[in-house]
Image 1 (cartoon, rainbow, N blue to C red):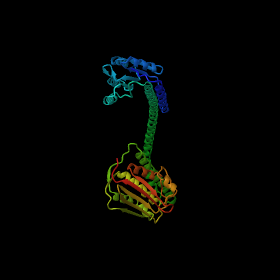
Image 2: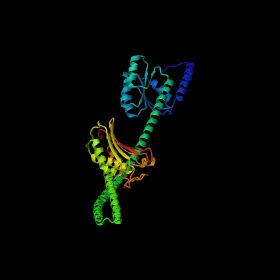
Image 3: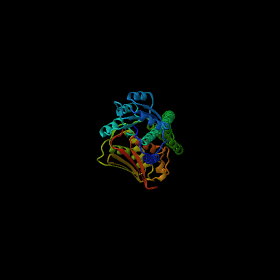
Image 4: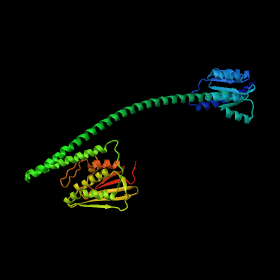
Length: 424
């Protein structure tokens, strides 16, 4: 039975409920939605009262038994189920638990005229109800609960809509990314193909130049013998031989770059003794240094262990640095090769007392075909590729090469830093 209260109580209650409603609306983020509500109660008067009270705001469907409630729940998509705890001989909380398992998004409100706290808490936990009301039911309080459920559903619908939009946007972005990735991959494949073709052409062209240069050197050698030491002819032949040697150096450097630039380039694993490497490089340039009266010295710490590196390429990098040091050092100067350990690394230095380098020289030194502002002190030739090759070789060994020079006329130090243990 629905309780009947005095008019004064109703006015007081209505004013209080209005204050609660105003508070609720103050925190509302979304407008309530019209819901389809199933009300299950074995009191027809209660069903009629709820239907009449809420029929303008929501679609109300009522039933008096749990079996009827199950049939309705299976036939319609409900937003909210309001159920009495005692539904005839059945337990309304168990019915709500069934509904929760089928459609957990459908909200649940439990009505009860019994105040067994333990049973009530158990029912609330098992059925996962949103609210519960004690009988006799206050319809205004029920309205507030239904509005809150409606607002919750509205928020949920907005979230679902936003999530769908986000998913659509993400799908669109994924398609764009896939399209751009495909375009970039095609462009990259084209560039690799062009690079491969260019490298092949360069290797073929440079390789084919070697035989003509060998022939040219041989002819120039024979002509020099036949010149009978005529000064004019001898001078011209010397110039020709120097040009041929310069071309040979350029060919060798370009071949080195072609090899070092291959995408599948892998450095060898040779066991190298650093002291032997530095001394052999110094011996290779001893004659050039002696001609310019340059003191060539090697200083190596005793505790440097054997290390793994590509012996041929690392020797070439070191030779390029020593060659430059001799070229850009004035007669009577000094070139020193040093090696020592720091934790985890081997440090090699090629230091000269020569012409030094400007800041622009240092900044651009490792680029292809770079010409330094200083000129070799003995009219030696330079391809402008030596330091570029050094950088390539050291990077392939996961190392670093740096330059320090106080300025013009104050010498230059090239420092190679290599990991002591080979990195993969």
